[in-house]
Length: 356
Image (cartoon, rainbow, N blue to C red; front, side):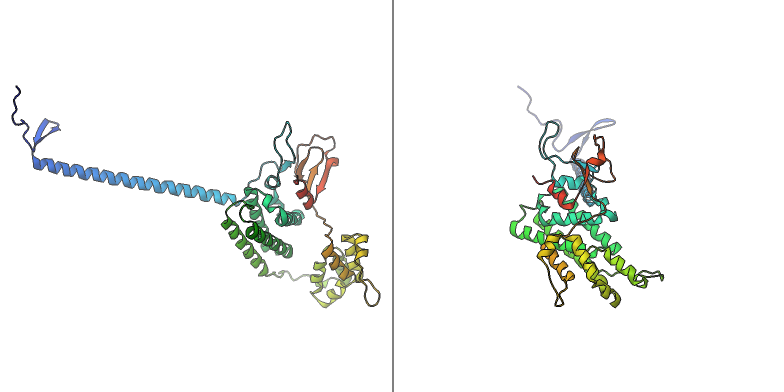
């Protein structure tokens, strides 16, 4: 039968291993060591908690920096190395799928094209056509690139103080289209949250207001000005203008230019340049003296028929390899005479290439 006596390690005592061996501690020493141990564990827990909070904050800050970096980068549209795109409308053995308007808008270097004076009006007209009817067909990335390019166009106009009227018309067209898409159809048509498009519409109104408040700076040089030129040169310059509204604006500068801007031959050539003889015959307007009112006929024809479009530089389409490209960029053409296979593409022709 085992001995049932008091434990030889008396209650309230404990043994602690030291350098000299095991030592017996009292209850008070045990409580003190326990308190010290608790404080150490508490400090360690607080230190670990602090490190955890710092780690979390660091991760959040790192994610925020990464998000801001990506957002800043999206302000600059991404373009491929090759400034051309193969336009294919169906699946073949070599290629699967088809090319969309949004893909072409991303691949072609429109961001650099607006810096070129020869291509500026071409890109503006293309943006206007997309704003009228093709905006819902763009992908989310293409829609973002569209707004970024539009912002750069507005900034260029504000800096150069040129082409103010066409950009204001572009903003009005885009705002009217977005109002109909947001109010009537909703976010199922436009890619992205509806609040994003509301914010973009506010930016459009802000850009339009900036263009309304633009102040044209007078040149600092004191040399010969436009008004110092003879009347024959004034008339020669007017004959080179292709928009009747520019003639009206030029005629408001001074009385002499106002008289020249009413020249009947000037408006006659402008009508014959933009419209066919058949269209002109349908809209004849006679004055009380029996003369044709070419100026009134011009603005009436503008309301009934589209203008003749002419651009210094346009996109080119190769009929041999079906590649769309800018004229000064190379494309991998296998034709013997690549120049004979290329034809200029108007802004409306660009849109029609992607109608299936």
